Length: 275
Ligand SMILES: C[S@@+](CC[C@H](N)C(=O)[O-])C[C@H]1O[C@@H](n2cnc3c(N)ncnc32)[C@H](O)[C@@H]1O
Image (cartoon, rainbow, N blue to C red; front, side):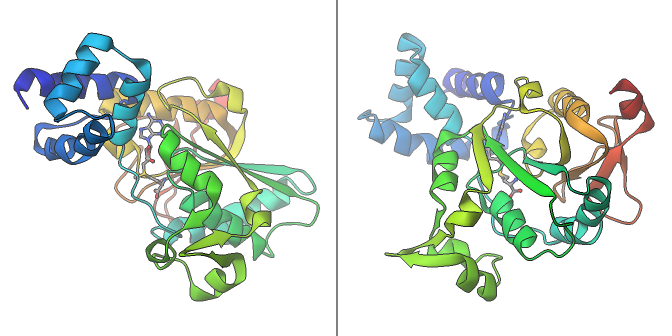
């Protein structure tokens, strides 16, 4: 691929998703757009770029962006955020919202393992006061991953990553070669398409936001913009959780890091005043 075509794809993906493709990640363009070009009946990625440039077809541009997203995820990924939820976040919110509603948002849910892990955890959690409703909203930019998330179907390989065997037995049934999550858990999660570059005010206020392993793909101004807007959607006593390689430090002053719990953040005084 020549430099101008490489630049064209990088700009397209950046403008539409915020994802930065650096020169050293150029191989991803080959491995991800090659299959898309073949599906479109085009002989090569060069031809795909030519079609993109000349026809500027919305459907195809959206598919390029979707193909360039990294959707790596697994059940109970990193474990600690789920410990924070179980040991501190949910007991505190349950006390504060007794008999009311707790709203949780997985802001880049990929194929659904993160919100379903929370749904399983809640099912086993004595921490939630009876009568308190917990709502889980899960969003992603990728139609491909949302379709899989909504299906609730996972391969043998996927259920072997992070999911305790007791939970597999309790919450999944075998469906041909795959495993299907129980309907009562599937229906607890509401999946929606959402680009974090666009306004998410319409989703309403949340008590917990998990925005894990997505900011790593963005540049500093994009991270700052997204986190500031997340702060505006968070209850004053709410919580933010980031991925293990992500932080608010040097990015925004709207959150404070928990001293005891890695990856857990609460709104700063500045954010509370602004709310
Ligand atoms: C690596 S996955 C993280 C999944 C899950 N949060 C976890 O930690 O396991 C990153 C997800 O971010 C999504 N993503 C990338 N850019 C996005 C954007 N601008 N808006 C919303 N989602 C985006 C991708 O489609 C992908 O599914």
